[in-house]
Amino acid sequence: MTNISVDELMSLKKKLEQKKEELQQLKGREKYLMDELKSKYNCCSLEEADELLNEKTSLLEKKKKSLQSKLTELQEQYEHLFS
Image 1 (cartoon, helix red, strand yellow):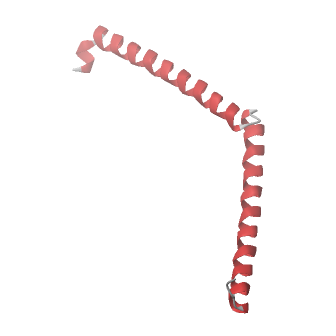
Image 2: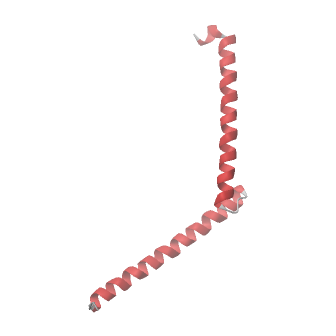
Image 3: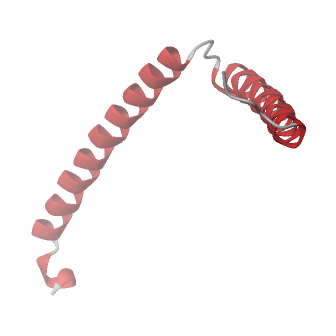
């Protein structure tokens, strides 16, 4: 069995206490972010948020394509203005 000095034990205890504090801070942050996700976007889980993000991304892509098509149409109709 390895002998550990009192100083080493105290150092390990201090590190452990710091990590426990960090863990509590992270749990608090996670709860805050999940509450914000629920209140702002009505999502109860990360999976729901991911689905919402995919839907919104798809919608934006469709709008982008539509705008690009309309811009191309305008450029063709008013070619002299875009020269």
